[in-house]
Amino acid sequence: MKVSTKCRYGLRAMIYLASRNSGTHVRRSDIARQESIPNQYLENILLLLRKAGLITVVRGAKGGFALARSPEKIKIADIVGPLEGPMAPVQCVVNPASCNKIRDCRARLLWDKLYLAEKQILESMTLQDLLPTRKDEWVI
Image (tube, rainbow, N blue to C red):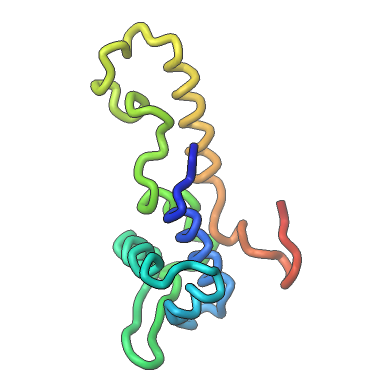
């Protein structure tokens, strides 16, 4: 799996929002500055995250972005999916009809296992898991 810049930036933005006080809205420019994400690029990412129901937007002087749910209720798969699309290493894993060698493909077992392992990891971790347990401590 190769993760795109859009996904890396999106995950960083979500972690930043999760690290803010619950219910506090953060301006896009603040996220962009803190996370070193180009502001215009971030706008497109935040739009995708909003469409996925992961963040809320309040317009106006005291507006900004906030998580739509608590960090422990947002799976990493919920974030990666809208930003990356299907995470399958090859198309035939999610669409068997796309391959004319599907019945006798010796590599299919590998692709299926890679996809399932990746999916299991992304489904098992939440945004809360990526937050520090203390201000300066990161758990790996």
